Image (cartoon, rainbow, N blue to C red):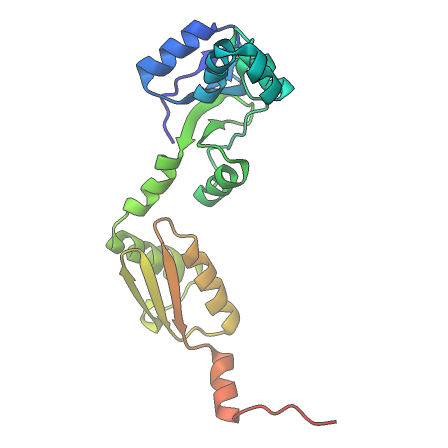
Length: 218
């Protein structure tokens, strides 16, 4: 997340919002109260409603929803903002933030602590930055943090190859459950684009040794 956040007080005027948005080259920012708690979000689209309304109030009023008309007539951040703001906590995963952005159709998420106080902001660009990790970093995390530390397995049982963020995992897990859990955790490693499961599961070996299964006829 970005810790230096451009925010606005509830009482900030329309002109102040427009100026700060242009000066800081941002397309939106959180609106906070006196305690720095996030109460909403103001975006450039909120500000542009006023321009559209001024151009031809009669026609535009017939097109806009009632809420949009109110925003077009607003003069403070509190009147302009979208509320409640969609937020995340510092401990939320990248996947959770990405799902929120996608489902709620937002481009940024204020980061708030347990008290709701603004501590940072996450943008789409920030989330995509996880894919800047090198293949070697990803491989090292899978081997050291997952296979050895989390699952307490001998790393020599597995082969981990990473190319352009695509992980190919081969080897022989002690149980099918362990293998599936390991694959699931690898998918959540930051920077992983995809996982190719090449594990030899014990259940698969048993089925192959027993031969093909036939369903009985009734």
